[in-house]
Length: 161
Image (cartoon, rainbow, N blue to C red; front, side, top):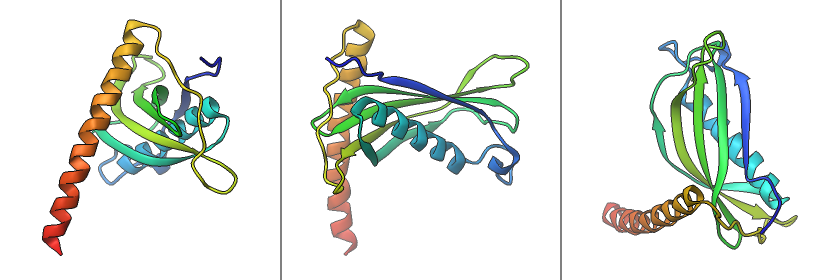
């Protein structure tokens, strides 16, 4: 077990440059914030440069408005030999009211790499609480489902050729 920090939260205000044509924060801006938080979390855990291997299951639950205080929380929920599965929750609120609500959530898989860009080993994360055990088990189930979806997508692509 490592003493490395497995969770972090980025906090900032949504800016006018983040807005889409509908007046809400653009989904692409939210995805960028998710990637930044996943990188910071995985780099802190592994002590290495990390790259995004997968971002999926992104659910946009509620809009974010300009001026909202945004909190992007990233938490390691599973580690492989070189990869880290990072659960991301995005919450936002009017800073005057401070009533956070979930706006987006997803899983991002980050891979640690060495100075030559080759995958590099990461410290194992071992869950110790019932909640953490459930998160790890969920990450494993999702990993298995992604494998099945990947195989189906490969078969689908063969029909398009």
